[in-house]
Image (cartoon, rainbow, N blue to C red; front, side, top):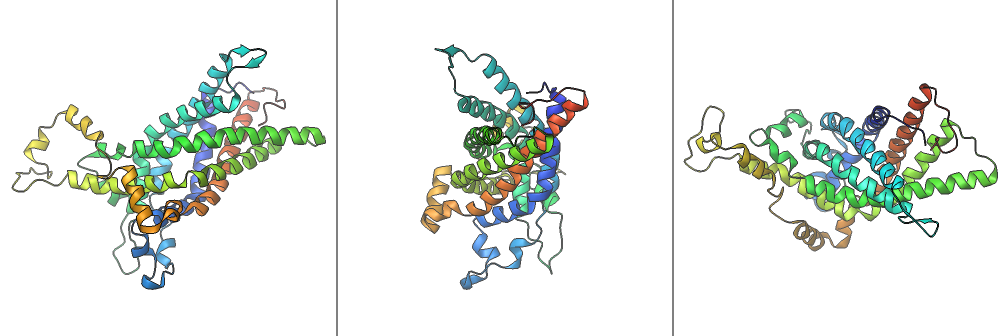
Length: 345
């Protein structure tokens, strides 16, 4: 593997994330709306159950917050992933001529660690994004900026934006723990097959395509399997805004200052504000939300949007990792480093 600098990895990861966000974001918006508790009320035509146009309107609502946060979070993810994978691989002891830790376990550990770092940066944008995706900008109503309207709901308690961290990490950890070992395994299998057939070219284009196919296949499988966790995570993220709005309501008879804060709020210490972060984003736990979904729509309710999620993850993951690997190798080659079969992923 080429010896990329952290800057190379950061730039490649950020560019990949930016490219994917612009292409697949509308599909993510539709998925959020399908998984929301208000899906039937807002996006279907009453008793008929037919989907109405509102489901497809405003597909890019909230995209700005995601682009701003995705650039540093994706760069942090890949820097951490490559670093942890390298450290574990270098220190992996050999027992009876074989590596003690199998490669899938190393990839899962590296991607899981990277995901925890990435989620800390991405959580506020994810909360803003999913709530902005649900803002109603139907014709005939005053048009509003969905992102700004959502941010205002957190203005008195911005730390509430991080309340969805555990929900996001709880979704992303099992997803990446499945996706990356599958991705690495499929990639190796494709390379081996092409080597055996004598059709391997070791070009940058071939490497990008192999990575895209491997990542798309592994990502779509992981996405379908983890859909129930994603549905619960969506409900929790949407509840975070309601929870924050409740926090900033002054009590009955409370004296407020010019900013709308109570005297008690004005005296709140930094320590108290940090404690606020630990509050759950929803007054309901994950298991309670899951049970309510099953009671309302059966087991299939936990897989709502699963097919769509699998499709856009196949496209998104393929583009994401394909662009990342191609960009990483391209940046290395510009410095004059020679490429071999292991460099071109």
